[in-house]
Image: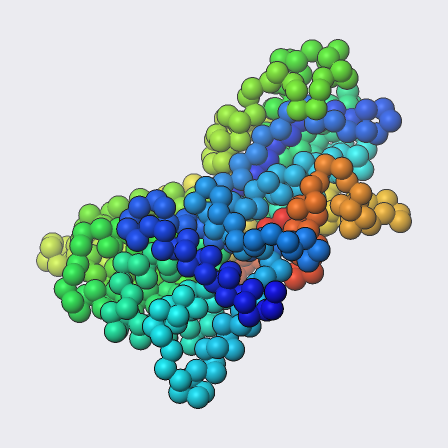
Length: 339
Length: 200
């Protein structure tokens, strides 16, 4: 079998799987995509696998399919050939499953969406499947934002769009450690689709559990900081700038963080988040600075004595505390030595 | 991530053969098509680790994004916990001690020699694996933690550091009867591309 007819057959098989059930919200869609490494010797069977709604390609065919489609697409662009929309749709889908960092293919699909060849719901679903293999692809998230903006413009806003995006971005975050793009996308969604107190409180709760089990995911801590800035806006608008409610919230966050320090004394992300809280407290409530300062001195003292007793990781922990005190002196202008 | 992937209880025979008495794994964070191979590699790693460690000792081995903690007791009963890098070491080692204590009271030591592979009638492992995903649960164990002398834990920075002279990990994988052909291909690909591989 020649390379191109092989590639065409594989593309045909994959397309059949995606078209098997046009109803996008059913569970017949592939839930996950992967490439399975296989020795080249064993290639007498179909390389497209579907197990339990999960789709996979055997690795030996990936190169053939990719180069076949890539050559076709580049050729059509260079020579300004007009290709059938159906073919373009099939090809870009397969090539993006293999390599989601190919911006050209995403752009072709954007054109297809603009000309109504692909529905937005279908496209959001495909992007989700692609995220299961490559959870950290910026082009993929930009594509989602393009689709969501289109929904906004057409005023088709359903209640479940926001919750669906929150689910997808959390899933992507769980598939790649410290997935900045997933959290940045989450921020984008809240900024563009409007927020309510409900969503903020709900998401503060979700991310609280998240950071407990992803202790070095600073992108997630940063997302919490973003939620707090939204919350601060709402509180100050409601209560005529009476921010005492926010003091308690920041104090609760600091207590939560202290609980984490007890188990994970040597993670820089926790120190960074701590600095955010301290800065918020000092900027918003200058009358309470003395109390905050006293607590912080206590925290540093206990951390230092703990780092002496803890034999395994003490050097790095000591270094983190040193950096923290330097930051306090520089940014908060506290004079710690006189204490 | 703070995650426990695998707990296994093993028995090390006097001729250095290692037999798994009971294992439990949580592979939900791995891709669907990789789970079988990951499970095989976890079992394989546990055996390699126990075969090459002395009795009695405590060992922690770092391998890529994973940490394997092992405790070999002087009565030849051993346990391994595989976690990710962020899971606190102290909690892992305390948990191993606790599990082995419980296992040896539940299953009489006379039967350890003759039990089948993964055949011990001990049911607690899955519950431990689920409960201790959150190390906060360990608060109740602080008393035990104080008994743990961390300076006695032997640290290795890779699995390779454990191997005896002349041994190579690639060859061990190639020769192993516990690993399927598919898993061996997975291993080779992960090594070749040196991506952040999903296998140990």
